[in-house]
Image 1 (cartoon, rainbow, N blue to C red):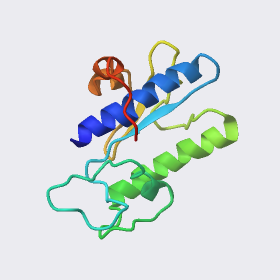
Image 2: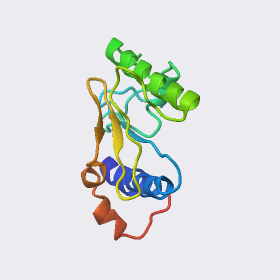
Image 3: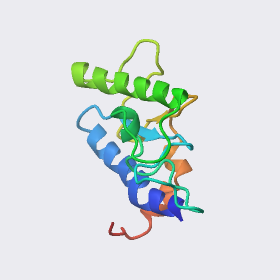
Image 4: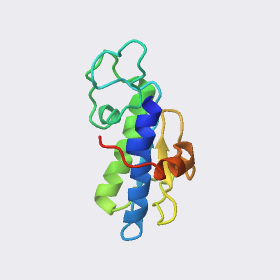
Length: 144
């Protein structure tokens, strides 16, 4: 169920919007992908996977968790990489960081997405396919 909500409501609409923006201005898209991310809502609900939830990356950017699990050293390292990308974008207008994976700008035809994970951070051109965006484009929009 969480994949349906993510794909239909967030992921695909983000990809489509990025393509529209990319036709006008440099546009950078990321996907936060830490399957072991702590939840911002507090304790995990048994049987409900809340990792990688919308806004989960905020704990990595702002050094806080509201749940029972603090960030691990590997997650802190991911957060530090993310902060360097954000700082480079704020300072130079492009998230280019020496020694880190390249973050290509999205194009008007296809969104290149930087996948931010604890072990690997990599550019990906398969985001739309992974989230079934061709399928979701043919469905009426859902309200949030």
